[in-house]
Length: 109
Length: 115
Image (cartoon, rainbow over all chains, first blue to last red; front, side, top):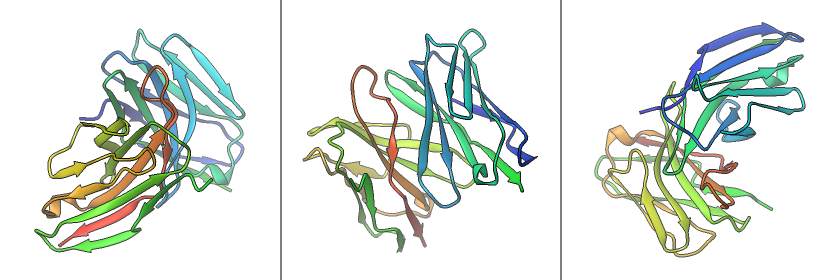
């Protein structure tokens, strides 16, 4: 069964707008990771946030983690058409790594 | 560096046939894993390995075998293909150190259809 649940399932925005995706999970974790997948391609790692971190930035990406609520969010600022892809959260624990079903982001030029 | 490579890119099998999906990485990563991705779903872990000679089952191991004789290679064997194994298969690797689940590097995938 999947550990992470992304919300929304699909998101459509205009270029230049911000995109926010959420991930909820059920059990304790070592870290949480976000990946991007372009259509028909392999996943590409975006950012990793450890369980003792609350916020992390990487370029136009901002990730937050709330372990008390078992949730994370990914914010993409000033989106571009090239950001169109599926985004997955993955929760990592000692024995397992589980991916959510993903959020399909469409950025319209 | 080629990163993580997978062959073949596409494969069609008949029910009951067996085959091996190849995966290789040139980053000297200790940790390697196999996932399957079904339409509209995330990835599910099939098998993983934390080093040469060591393998373990993931979430959906039934019908699949793996071995890890070298650091570089991690083949996935389908013993007797079934239509339920129609999927896209991804191999991934990562450097170990503390948690086995650091940043993972993914191959381009193998699209398998079982008739």
